[in-house]
Image (tube, rainbow, N blue to C red; front, side, top):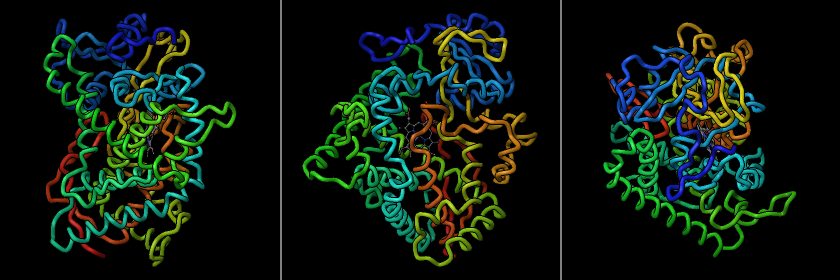
Length: 480
Ligand code: MNH
């Protein structure tokens, strides 16, 4: 990865300076017709919705295309065949670029933002992976139930008062509390507050800023000066918060064997090496952010689709009633038995994968799809939202919400590598089982307790801040 060097002063990575250098036959890749000199493909685009704009352009230009914004040209891929090639780990690897790289000032060489060649990636991966084993998950289950109980108390109050509930807001409280308590023994008291915890505000600020930096041209970066200042304050706040969490654990001594204990105490099984204090700080921020924002969106989209599809809701409720019976609280093993609800979740993540894209780079000179030569280090963005709509994999009505797409037979009948909400390969999501257990558990509990209905006339709109979230989603509840 010789091309990846840090730019002096800015901690931002530099791959090839332009796509032309990495892709010698860029002329074979279509781009939007009305290109403005210097500025690029900005006609009809909005800095707040880069993913949705790219989806529209993708539908016009096909499975591989390029977009230029302010001198930066990016190649996008979403065709099922091409995405399957990019999943081949012998030819491609994760590329830390764009939004992910913009998070380096916050998350440093933490797991999500580490370059493949940084030794702290393998070290942290090996130390932390057992924190996501079946046994570990079983240990988190009671804490997840506690947090879900707090959510339901809040929803009971909303229901009693005839108030619609703020779904993304409440799901964010839930998922932040869940990762903070299971991973770090920390209670943000989200449900005791009217407003979101300042940690969330600071985090959302940092994510939005990272996204904004992708779409604001360097020449106009003066516009970001105010934002830059706020971002520095957000970063300082995030650091302070995690330093307090770490200090509290060190002072308390023995912890419950959670992620933080692993970070502080566990040595690598082969090398005996441990995580350095600065790296632990980066990992705590990484897990607090990566561990809640995307799950919150996934739960919110699933609740939206359940409220929109009465037949799906009824079927999911029937399953929960049947599988859980009237056990006051479901046992760990009973969660994965909600097979239909899991399909609802998968189908929601198909339409709106809450981490909507991931980047891949060539590990050696290669040719993509037999026509697009790439030099070693050249990279492309897999547009997951569109991969999940490719008719070659999903049929001729990919916009239709249908959990039956995820029956075992339907999955077997599809080509591989067409469903990638968790990314791919060695750098795929480490928290996948955690997110699935948490989300299935919470949806099961909510469906057992409430009927959901949409606000009349609600149209799904999507907020983007590196992750995706339904905007302004409120639901009405009635106790069953
Ligand atoms: Mn998660 C990586 C999606 C929940 C922690 N996650 C990724 C990637 C995707 C992703 C996609 C790969 C990104 C890339 O290739 O650049 N993650 C999700 C989604 C959910 C999710 C859609 C929920 C839904 N993630 C979680 C949870 C945690 C977590 C929960 C922690 C408890 N994710 C991570 C970490 C990485 C990651 C850490 C980086 C892994 C690595 O590079 O080794």
